[in-house]
Image 1 (tube, rainbow, N blue to C red):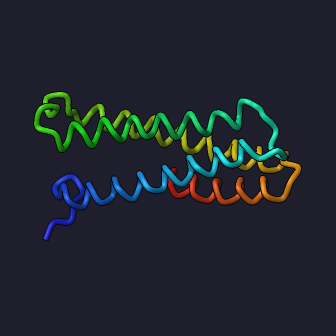
Image 2 (cartoon, rainbow, N blue to C red):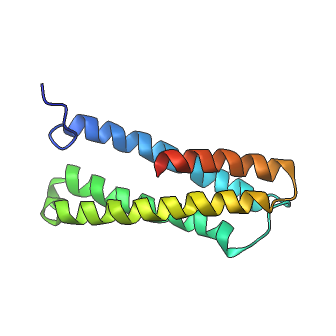
Length: 125
């Protein structure tokens, strides 16, 4: 029984669904944190939203080129690997920036949202 993710499209698709759900939750938390009046409106807080959108686009490319027969000609293992490496670096940077930004928050709700977002970003990293 080979449980390799590359050889099992069902497991790979379920993993993409889980990652997509976590990505959506982090996106909503970062929007809520940005909308909170106690969070400073700096570029570091906006950057988290951009990282979520970038990851969603990368994941959409991977899912569409894997599962849609018309787009399979653009599927490439090298591209998948490069996108995943780029994604990992950006999620690590977002984890560090989210923790640093949580320290500068003035309200408890902003710090709580930052802590929950940092925890979920750690799992996406």
